[in-house]
Length: 47
Image (cartoon, rainbow, N blue to C red):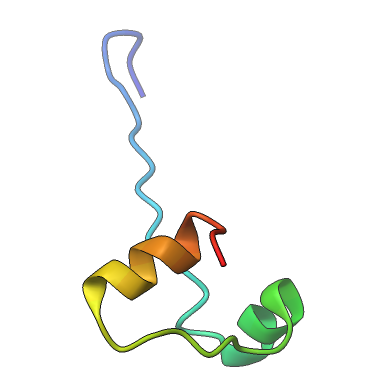
């Protein structure tokens, strides 16, 4: 590889490809409302 060349690494991991690891990272799934406003409220940590 020459001094004027670059290497780019693109990662696409998001844990959805490994459900066991996603479970270890996040634990039990949470129930969330079935509408945009309810989900945004949930993500904001509001009751």
